[in-house]
Image (cartoon, rainbow, N blue to C red; front, top):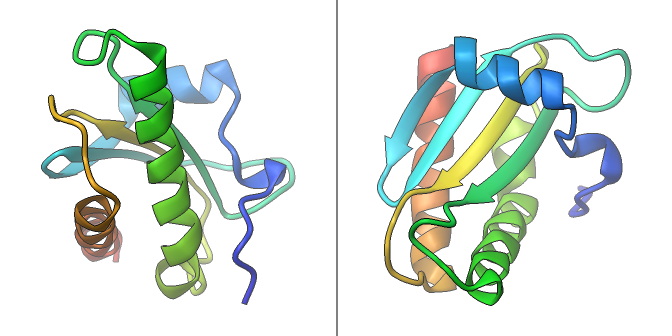
Length: 123
């Protein structure tokens, strides 16, 4: 089991992110929303992921960065249990849509619920 979040797993392409918001679907477990799109990558992992926090809800960059760090950490710790058996390639974007600063435990439980909903919709 590899508990790392490598560069190949990060969704960075502006074209893919734009396509994700235009054509993608979503599942929600408040305060998180997962946008997903089945796509193909030239190389890298089957799942490429990115996280985002709204500047409207969190004016200070310190707060936004902390929430993004927590979201990446919960993904890193739980990706093996949810995405090991996926064979198709997906682009994922996790959005924090809440207005209050989350705790790690609540974020982790919501992230697990979000991944279960995603896998149920996909399969």
